[in-house]
Length: 156
Image 1: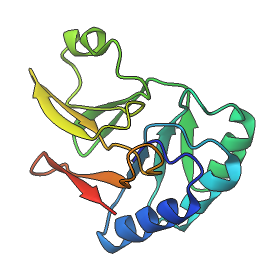
Image 2 (image 1 turned 135 degrees about the vertical axis):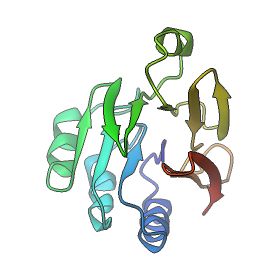
Image 3 (image 1 turned 180 degrees about the vertical axis):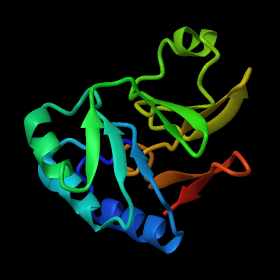
């Protein structure tokens, strides 16, 4: 998920969807905005990994809100999960810098509010769109299966 922008109703819908789907990890690609909104993710039945977005000004508050159930860091965040190497960033530019290294299996980003899934070389790029739905009127997340390596955009 990405760009939830304090939309509590949409965040709750996303939490419900992720829990109903049996997710083992949720990734947020930035722009929570306020700690009270990030705290809504405490209802997840799995850990959260996240990066700050360009609109996340209250970083200490976000860290404190997320710390009991997850991790939030300055982008880019790289980690291994299910034998895949993930890279998470809010901004998608410059993706060529990241992709040239050819060491990431999945690159998750946000910022544009436009959902997209595409393959570039050996890396699957996923932008879940905007969970908050303020710009497009569509509340979206992405669902990724690390076994099949397939992703899909979900309208909440």
